[in-house]
Image (tube, rainbow, N blue to C red; front, side):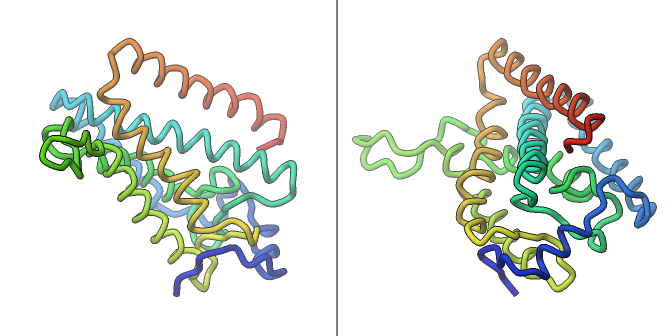
Length: 223
């Protein structure tokens, strides 16, 4: 039921080799419904002037896209990505490691994480009689969400239809947790409280880099 590391088997490699990026063969109308839901969520937060929540969503989603681009580059160089999805498990594969449904989930994951923080985001845990500084609730929240997502990914990796595929034997729950999900949720939990100019530079720089890499690398056939 759960798979904690890549198998390195020929079967797993064959499933990855069969992945067709940006094919519409499995396309269906859930694509449009999911897009409408995400649009509604963002527009509702914007209309309510809940801009911190929007920043949280954009911060994580921008980091997500940077990781997916890097994963696709790894695939181009070494033959296999760190992670990917099977054709049968999705309606549309955007890049070798991410499908439409997962990408749309990540577009709101940062919002969810930020909303789960205490109302007072200066709260610190594990303080002792005021003598210890403790740990920021934003850091604790990021670690908790990263652990939850890592565990769920291990479930996906263990599904019979190859919903999520790990090929390399050294890649699995622990490296995913540390190198991927912790940075994701650190971005969503910390960026909204940045000084406005720094936050603006971070988001513009991040999304600008994502856009530049996509515009350049997709036509070149790299990703």
